[in-house]
Image (cartoon, rainbow, N blue to C red; front, side, top):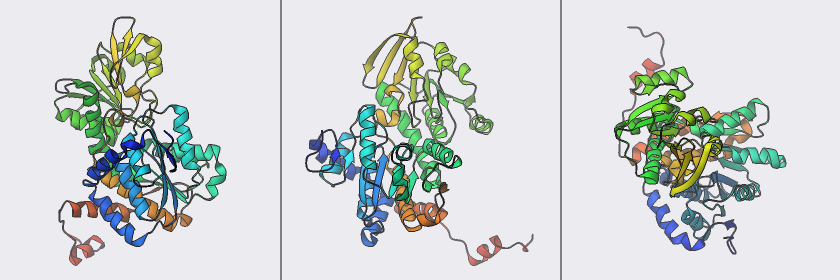
Length: 423
Protein backbone atom coordinates (compact mmCIF):
# COMPACT_ATOMS: atom_id res chain seq x y z
CA UNK A 1 0.00 0.00 0.00
CA UNK A 2 1.16 3.55 -0.71
CA UNK A 3 1.60 5.28 2.62
CA UNK A 4 -0.50 8.31 3.32
CA UNK A 5 1.24 11.51 4.38
CA UNK A 6 4.59 9.76 4.80
CA UNK A 7 6.99 8.95 1.99
CA UNK A 8 7.35 5.25 1.29
CA UNK A 9 5.64 2.24 -0.17
CA UNK A 10 5.08 -0.70 2.19
CA UNK A 11 2.58 -3.52 2.42
CA UNK A 12 0.58 -2.58 5.53
CA UNK A 13 1.24 0.21 8.03
CA UNK A 14 -0.83 -1.61 10.66
CA UNK A 15 2.09 -4.05 11.02
CA UNK A 16 4.28 -1.30 12.46
CA UNK A 17 3.85 -2.10 16.16
CA UNK A 18 4.91 -5.70 15.57
CA UNK A 19 7.88 -4.43 13.60
CA UNK A 20 8.97 -2.16 16.44
CA UNK A 21 8.98 -5.09 18.87
CA UNK A 22 11.12 -7.18 16.54
CA UNK A 23 13.52 -4.29 15.82
CA UNK A 24 13.98 -3.75 19.55
CA UNK A 25 14.52 -7.50 20.08
CA UNK A 26 17.28 -7.50 17.45
CA UNK A 27 18.87 -4.47 19.10
CA UNK A 28 19.45 -6.57 22.25
CA UNK A 29 22.02 -8.57 20.26
CA UNK A 30 23.59 -5.55 18.54
CA UNK A 31 25.76 -4.07 21.28
CA UNK A 32 28.37 -2.61 18.92
CA UNK A 33 25.72 -0.72 16.97
CA UNK A 34 24.32 0.53 20.26
CA UNK A 35 27.69 2.00 21.24
CA UNK A 36 28.08 3.63 17.82
CA UNK A 37 24.54 5.01 17.97
CA UNK A 38 25.21 6.60 21.36
CA UNK A 39 28.28 8.36 19.95
CA UNK A 40 26.44 9.39 16.80
CA UNK A 41 23.68 10.96 18.89
CA UNK A 42 26.23 13.14 20.67
CA UNK A 43 28.48 14.01 17.72
CA UNK A 44 26.01 14.05 14.77
CA UNK A 45 28.74 13.22 12.20
CA UNK A 46 26.20 12.68 9.40
CA UNK A 47 24.14 15.81 10.00
CA UNK A 48 22.08 16.59 6.89
CA UNK A 49 23.79 13.97 4.71
CA UNK A 50 21.40 12.29 2.28
CA UNK A 51 21.87 8.50 2.35
CA UNK A 52 20.11 5.85 0.27
CA UNK A 53 20.22 2.35 1.73
CA UNK A 54 19.59 -0.60 -0.61
CA UNK A 55 19.61 -3.66 1.60
CA UNK A 56 17.53 -6.57 2.85
CA UNK A 57 14.81 -4.87 4.89
CA UNK A 58 15.19 -6.81 8.13
CA UNK A 59 15.29 -5.98 11.82
CA UNK A 60 19.07 -5.64 11.64
CA UNK A 61 18.93 -3.23 8.69
CA UNK A 62 16.38 -1.21 10.63
CA UNK A 63 18.90 -0.82 13.44
CA UNK A 64 21.48 0.39 10.92
CA UNK A 65 18.99 2.93 9.55
CA UNK A 66 18.22 4.13 13.08
CA UNK A 67 21.94 4.55 13.78
CA UNK A 68 22.34 6.64 10.63
CA UNK A 69 19.32 8.68 11.69
CA UNK A 70 20.88 9.18 15.13
CA UNK A 71 23.97 10.56 13.39
CA UNK A 72 21.82 13.19 11.67
CA UNK A 73 21.45 11.51 8.28
CA UNK A 74 18.48 12.00 5.99
CA UNK A 75 18.08 8.32 5.11
CA UNK A 76 15.85 6.44 2.68
CA UNK A 77 15.61 2.63 2.48
CA UNK A 78 14.74 0.26 -0.36
CA UNK A 79 15.00 -3.52 -0.74
CA UNK A 80 17.96 -5.28 -2.33
CA UNK A 81 15.94 -8.45 -2.96
CA UNK A 82 12.24 -8.87 -3.83
CA UNK A 83 11.68 -11.73 -1.36
CA UNK A 84 13.75 -10.75 1.67
CA UNK A 85 11.65 -7.89 3.05
CA UNK A 86 10.09 -8.22 6.48
CA UNK A 87 6.87 -6.26 5.96
CA UNK A 88 6.39 -5.40 9.62
CA UNK A 89 9.89 -3.89 9.75
CA UNK A 90 9.25 -1.82 6.62
CA UNK A 91 6.01 -0.55 8.16
CA UNK A 92 7.76 0.36 11.43
CA UNK A 93 10.51 2.29 9.64
CA UNK A 94 7.89 4.46 7.95
CA UNK A 95 5.18 4.81 10.58
CA UNK A 96 7.18 4.77 13.83
CA UNK A 97 10.61 6.08 12.88
CA UNK A 98 9.86 8.40 9.96
CA UNK A 99 12.36 6.79 7.60
CA UNK A 100 10.97 6.59 4.03
CA UNK A 101 11.02 2.93 3.01
CA UNK A 102 10.14 1.38 -0.35
CA UNK A 103 9.88 -2.36 0.10
CA UNK A 104 7.21 -5.08 -0.12
CA UNK A 105 7.92 -8.79 0.28
CA UNK A 106 7.21 -10.59 -2.98
CA UNK A 107 7.18 -7.44 -5.12
CA UNK A 108 7.50 -8.04 -8.85
CA UNK A 109 10.53 -6.96 -10.86
CA UNK A 110 8.91 -3.72 -12.03
CA UNK A 111 8.03 -2.72 -8.46
CA UNK A 112 11.50 -3.67 -7.26
CA UNK A 113 13.11 -1.22 -9.67
CA UNK A 114 10.44 1.41 -9.06
CA UNK A 115 11.35 1.27 -5.38
CA UNK A 116 15.06 1.47 -6.17
CA UNK A 117 14.49 4.51 -8.36
CA UNK A 118 12.57 6.13 -5.50
CA UNK A 119 15.68 5.74 -3.34
CA UNK A 120 17.80 7.21 -6.14
CA UNK A 121 15.38 10.13 -6.46
CA UNK A 122 16.49 11.03 -2.94
CA UNK A 123 19.66 12.31 -4.69
CA UNK A 124 21.94 10.58 -2.19
CA UNK A 125 25.36 11.86 -1.22
CA UNK A 126 26.26 8.43 0.16
CA UNK A 127 24.83 5.05 -0.85
CA UNK A 128 24.80 1.77 1.05
CA UNK A 129 24.57 -1.01 -1.51
CA UNK A 130 23.98 -4.76 -1.24
CA UNK A 131 24.73 -6.40 -4.56
CA UNK A 132 25.52 -3.17 -6.48
CA UNK A 133 22.04 -2.85 -8.02
CA UNK A 134 21.85 0.73 -6.74
CA UNK A 135 25.24 1.49 -8.28
CA UNK A 136 24.49 0.00 -11.67
CA UNK A 137 21.09 1.70 -11.84
CA UNK A 138 22.54 5.13 -11.00
CA UNK A 139 25.37 4.74 -13.51
CA UNK A 140 23.10 3.57 -16.32
CA UNK A 141 20.00 5.71 -15.72
CA UNK A 142 21.02 8.85 -13.81
CA UNK A 143 24.73 9.49 -14.38
CA UNK A 144 24.15 13.19 -13.68
CA UNK A 145 23.94 12.26 -9.97
CA UNK A 146 27.50 10.93 -9.92
CA UNK A 147 28.87 14.44 -9.43
CA UNK A 148 27.09 14.78 -6.09
CA UNK A 149 27.70 11.27 -4.71
CA UNK A 150 30.60 11.30 -2.23
CA UNK A 151 30.88 7.53 -2.22
CA UNK A 152 29.25 4.23 -1.34
CA UNK A 153 29.70 1.07 0.67
CA UNK A 154 29.12 -2.47 -0.60
CA UNK A 155 28.01 -5.40 1.55
CA UNK A 156 28.46 -8.44 -0.69
CA UNK A 157 31.09 -10.41 -2.57
CA UNK A 158 28.87 -10.31 -5.66
CA UNK A 159 28.57 -6.54 -5.49
CA UNK A 160 32.31 -6.04 -5.07
CA UNK A 161 32.99 -8.18 -8.15
CA UNK A 162 30.62 -5.99 -10.16
CA UNK A 163 32.12 -2.75 -8.80
CA UNK A 164 35.70 -3.88 -9.40
CA UNK A 165 34.73 -4.65 -13.00
CA UNK A 166 33.26 -1.15 -13.32
CA UNK A 167 36.41 0.40 -11.88
CA UNK A 168 38.69 -1.59 -14.19
CA UNK A 169 36.59 -0.43 -17.14
CA UNK A 170 36.92 3.19 -15.97
CA UNK A 171 33.16 3.43 -15.37
CA UNK A 172 32.94 3.75 -11.58
CA UNK A 173 31.89 7.29 -10.75
CA UNK A 174 32.73 7.46 -7.03
CA UNK A 175 34.84 5.67 -4.39
CA UNK A 176 33.43 2.54 -2.77
CA UNK A 177 34.38 0.96 0.54
CA UNK A 178 34.24 -2.85 0.41
CA UNK A 179 32.53 -3.54 3.72
CA UNK A 180 32.23 -7.20 2.71
CA UNK A 181 36.01 -7.62 2.91
CA UNK A 182 36.47 -6.30 6.45
CA UNK A 183 37.77 -8.99 8.78
CA UNK A 184 34.96 -8.26 11.24
CA UNK A 185 32.51 -8.83 8.39
CA UNK A 186 33.53 -11.85 6.34
CA UNK A 187 35.13 -13.87 9.14
CA UNK A 188 31.93 -13.67 11.16
CA UNK A 189 28.96 -12.66 8.99
CA UNK A 190 29.88 -14.84 6.01
CA UNK A 191 31.07 -17.85 7.99
CA UNK A 192 28.93 -17.95 11.14
CA UNK A 193 25.98 -15.91 9.88
CA UNK A 194 25.54 -17.58 6.50
CA UNK A 195 26.45 -20.96 7.95
CA UNK A 196 23.63 -20.86 10.48
CA UNK A 197 20.99 -18.90 8.57
CA UNK A 198 21.25 -20.94 5.36
CA UNK A 199 20.57 -24.19 7.17
CA UNK A 200 17.86 -22.42 9.16
CA UNK A 201 16.11 -21.39 5.93
CA UNK A 202 16.33 -24.87 4.41
CA UNK A 203 15.02 -26.51 7.58
CA UNK A 204 12.14 -24.04 7.93
CA UNK A 205 11.19 -24.58 4.29
CA UNK A 206 11.43 -28.39 4.31
CA UNK A 207 11.74 -29.73 7.87
CA UNK A 208 14.42 -32.02 6.42
CA UNK A 209 16.90 -33.91 8.64
CA UNK A 210 20.52 -33.10 7.76
CA UNK A 211 22.06 -36.01 9.66
CA UNK A 212 23.04 -38.77 7.23
CA UNK A 213 22.31 -36.70 4.11
CA UNK A 214 24.85 -36.00 1.39
CA UNK A 215 24.99 -32.21 1.33
CA UNK A 216 26.71 -30.65 -1.68
CA UNK A 217 28.10 -27.14 -1.09
CA UNK A 218 29.00 -25.28 -4.30
CA UNK A 219 31.75 -22.78 -3.51
CA UNK A 220 34.18 -22.72 -0.60
CA UNK A 221 34.58 -19.04 0.09
CA UNK A 222 33.78 -17.79 3.57
CA UNK A 223 30.05 -18.41 3.08
CA UNK A 224 30.62 -21.92 1.73
CA UNK A 225 33.00 -22.69 4.59
CA UNK A 226 30.34 -21.70 7.10
CA UNK A 227 27.59 -23.77 5.47
CA UNK A 228 29.81 -26.84 5.07
CA UNK A 229 31.01 -26.56 8.66
CA UNK A 230 27.48 -26.31 10.06
CA UNK A 231 26.11 -29.10 7.84
CA UNK A 232 28.95 -31.38 8.89
CA UNK A 233 28.29 -30.49 12.51
CA UNK A 234 24.70 -31.65 12.08
CA UNK A 235 25.84 -35.06 10.87
CA UNK A 236 25.73 -34.55 7.12
CA UNK A 237 28.19 -36.14 4.70
CA UNK A 238 29.55 -32.94 3.17
CA UNK A 239 30.74 -32.62 -0.42
CA UNK A 240 32.34 -29.43 -1.75
CA UNK A 241 32.62 -28.38 -5.39
CA UNK A 242 35.05 -25.64 -6.41
CA UNK A 243 36.84 -24.06 -9.37
CA UNK A 244 39.70 -22.66 -7.28
CA UNK A 245 42.42 -25.25 -6.54
CA UNK A 246 43.53 -23.61 -3.28
CA UNK A 247 39.99 -23.48 -1.89
CA UNK A 248 39.37 -27.03 -3.06
CA UNK A 249 42.51 -28.17 -1.26
CA UNK A 250 41.45 -26.31 1.87
CA UNK A 251 38.03 -28.01 1.77
CA UNK A 252 39.70 -31.41 1.49
CA UNK A 253 42.02 -30.60 4.41
CA UNK A 254 38.98 -29.48 6.44
CA UNK A 255 37.54 -32.98 6.05
CA UNK A 256 35.03 -32.47 3.25
CA UNK A 257 34.84 -34.67 0.18
CA UNK A 258 35.78 -32.67 -2.92
CA UNK A 259 34.66 -33.50 -6.45
CA UNK A 260 33.25 -31.94 -9.60
CA UNK A 261 29.63 -30.86 -9.61
CA UNK A 262 28.77 -33.35 -12.36
CA UNK A 263 29.88 -36.19 -10.07
CA UNK A 264 28.35 -34.66 -6.94
CA UNK A 265 25.04 -34.20 -8.77
CA UNK A 266 24.68 -37.97 -9.09
CA UNK A 267 24.85 -38.65 -5.34
CA UNK A 268 23.75 -35.48 -3.51
CA UNK A 269 20.58 -35.22 -1.43
CA UNK A 270 20.72 -31.46 -0.72
CA UNK A 271 22.49 -28.90 -2.93
CA UNK A 272 23.43 -25.41 -1.73
CA UNK A 273 25.03 -22.84 -4.06
CA UNK A 274 27.25 -20.04 -2.70
CA UNK A 275 29.50 -19.17 -5.63
CA UNK A 276 28.41 -15.67 -6.63
CA UNK A 277 28.46 -16.88 -10.22
CA UNK A 278 26.14 -17.97 -12.99
CA UNK A 279 24.73 -21.52 -13.22
CA UNK A 280 26.73 -23.32 -10.56
CA UNK A 281 23.95 -25.88 -11.05
CA UNK A 282 23.33 -26.19 -14.78
CA UNK A 283 21.24 -28.42 -17.05
CA UNK A 284 23.79 -31.30 -17.19
CA UNK A 285 23.74 -31.45 -13.39
CA UNK A 286 19.95 -31.40 -13.22
CA UNK A 287 19.80 -34.25 -15.73
CA UNK A 288 21.68 -36.64 -13.43
CA UNK A 289 20.32 -35.65 -10.01
CA UNK A 290 18.49 -38.38 -8.18
CA UNK A 291 14.80 -38.40 -7.42
CA UNK A 292 13.94 -36.18 -4.45
CA UNK A 293 17.01 -33.95 -4.54
CA UNK A 294 16.57 -30.58 -2.81
CA UNK A 295 18.21 -27.53 -4.40
CA UNK A 296 18.75 -24.20 -2.63
CA UNK A 297 20.74 -21.03 -3.24
CA UNK A 298 22.43 -18.83 -0.67
CA UNK A 299 24.30 -16.59 -3.11
CA UNK A 300 23.14 -13.01 -3.51
CA UNK A 301 21.46 -13.24 -6.93
CA UNK A 302 19.07 -15.88 -8.26
CA UNK A 303 21.38 -16.91 -11.11
CA UNK A 304 23.31 -19.75 -9.48
CA UNK A 305 20.66 -22.39 -10.18
CA UNK A 306 19.53 -22.61 -13.81
CA UNK A 307 15.84 -22.62 -12.96
CA UNK A 308 14.90 -21.77 -16.55
CA UNK A 309 16.54 -24.97 -17.77
CA UNK A 310 14.65 -26.93 -15.12
CA UNK A 311 11.39 -25.28 -16.19
CA UNK A 312 12.06 -26.43 -19.78
CA UNK A 313 12.91 -29.97 -18.64
CA UNK A 314 9.87 -30.38 -16.42
CA UNK A 315 6.53 -31.85 -17.42
CA UNK A 316 4.88 -30.22 -14.43
CA UNK A 317 5.48 -27.93 -11.47
CA UNK A 318 3.61 -27.37 -8.25
CA UNK A 319 4.18 -25.49 -5.03
CA UNK A 320 3.90 -28.07 -2.28
CA UNK A 321 5.04 -26.01 0.71
CA UNK A 322 5.49 -22.32 1.36
CA UNK A 323 8.89 -22.09 -0.29
CA UNK A 324 9.15 -25.46 -2.05
CA UNK A 325 8.47 -25.95 -5.77
CA UNK A 326 8.29 -29.55 -7.01
CA UNK A 327 9.38 -30.19 -10.61
CA UNK A 328 8.19 -33.43 -12.23
CA UNK A 329 10.53 -34.62 -14.98
CA UNK A 330 9.56 -36.83 -17.91
CA UNK A 331 11.51 -39.79 -16.47
CA UNK A 332 9.46 -39.66 -13.26
CA UNK A 333 12.07 -37.95 -11.10
CA UNK A 334 11.04 -35.10 -8.83
CA UNK A 335 13.41 -32.24 -7.99
CA UNK A 336 12.68 -29.60 -5.38
CA UNK A 337 13.80 -25.96 -5.67
CA UNK A 338 13.57 -23.79 -2.58
CA UNK A 339 12.59 -20.11 -2.56
CA UNK A 340 12.53 -19.78 -6.36
CA UNK A 341 16.32 -20.05 -6.30
CA UNK A 342 16.69 -16.83 -4.31
CA UNK A 343 18.57 -16.33 -1.04
CA UNK A 344 17.07 -19.10 1.07
CA UNK A 345 18.19 -17.69 4.40
CA UNK A 346 16.15 -14.55 3.81
CA UNK A 347 13.31 -16.02 1.75
CA UNK A 348 12.35 -18.77 4.20
CA UNK A 349 13.99 -17.53 7.41
CA UNK A 350 15.09 -14.23 8.98
CA UNK A 351 18.60 -13.91 7.60
CA UNK A 352 21.71 -13.79 9.73
CA UNK A 353 21.50 -13.67 13.52
CA UNK A 354 21.56 -10.13 14.86
CA UNK A 355 24.82 -10.72 16.75
CA UNK A 356 26.84 -11.14 13.55
CA UNK A 357 25.00 -8.44 11.62
CA UNK A 358 25.97 -6.19 14.52
CA UNK A 359 29.56 -6.22 13.24
CA UNK A 360 28.64 -6.04 9.56
CA UNK A 361 26.45 -3.00 10.03
CA UNK A 362 28.94 -1.41 12.42
CA UNK A 363 31.31 -1.53 9.46
CA UNK A 364 28.63 0.13 7.34
CA UNK A 365 27.98 2.94 9.81
CA UNK A 366 31.65 3.73 10.44
CA UNK A 367 32.53 3.43 6.74
CA UNK A 368 29.77 5.92 5.90
CA UNK A 369 31.21 8.29 8.50
CA UNK A 370 34.66 7.79 6.94
CA UNK A 371 33.31 8.63 3.48
CA UNK A 372 31.67 11.81 4.73
CA UNK A 373 34.97 12.90 6.26
CA UNK A 374 37.46 11.66 3.66
CA UNK A 375 35.74 10.88 0.33
CA UNK A 376 37.36 13.83 -1.46
CA UNK A 377 40.75 12.22 -0.91
CA UNK A 378 39.72 8.84 -2.35
CA UNK A 379 39.90 7.90 -6.01
CA UNK A 380 37.09 6.17 -7.88
CA UNK A 381 37.82 2.53 -7.12
CA UNK A 382 36.98 -0.09 -4.50
CA UNK A 383 38.80 0.56 -1.22
CA UNK A 384 39.32 -1.66 1.80
CA UNK A 385 37.73 -0.77 5.11
CA UNK A 386 40.39 1.22 7.01
CA UNK A 387 42.18 -1.10 9.44
CA UNK A 388 41.50 1.23 12.37
CA UNK A 389 37.73 0.84 11.77
CA UNK A 390 38.01 -2.95 11.57
CA UNK A 391 40.04 -3.12 14.79
CA UNK A 392 37.75 -0.68 16.60
CA UNK A 393 34.73 -2.86 15.80
CA UNK A 394 36.60 -5.89 17.11
CA UNK A 395 37.41 -3.95 20.28
CA UNK A 396 33.81 -2.85 20.77
CA UNK A 397 32.53 -6.39 20.21
CA UNK A 398 34.95 -7.80 22.80
CA UNK A 399 33.90 -5.06 25.22
CA UNK A 400 30.24 -5.98 24.76
CA UNK A 401 31.12 -9.64 25.45
CA UNK A 402 33.10 -8.63 28.56
CA UNK A 403 36.24 -10.23 27.15
CA UNK A 404 39.61 -8.72 28.03
CA UNK A 405 42.75 -9.26 25.99
CA UNK A 406 46.41 -8.47 26.51
CA UNK A 407 48.30 -5.39 25.32
CA UNK A 408 51.87 -5.34 24.06
CA UNK A 409 54.48 -4.13 26.52
CA UNK A 410 56.95 -1.43 25.48
CA UNK A 411 59.61 -4.14 25.27
CA UNK A 412 57.44 -6.24 22.95
CA UNK A 413 56.59 -3.26 20.71
CA UNK A 414 60.29 -2.41 20.47
CA UNK A 415 61.12 -6.00 19.52
CA UNK A 416 58.44 -6.12 16.81
CA UNK A 417 59.64 -2.84 15.27
CA UNK A 418 63.33 -3.74 15.32
CA UNK A 419 65.58 -5.59 12.89
CA UNK A 420 68.83 -5.81 14.82
CA UNK A 421 67.73 -7.90 17.80
CA UNK A 422 68.86 -11.41 17.00
CA UNK A 423 68.54 -14.76 18.68
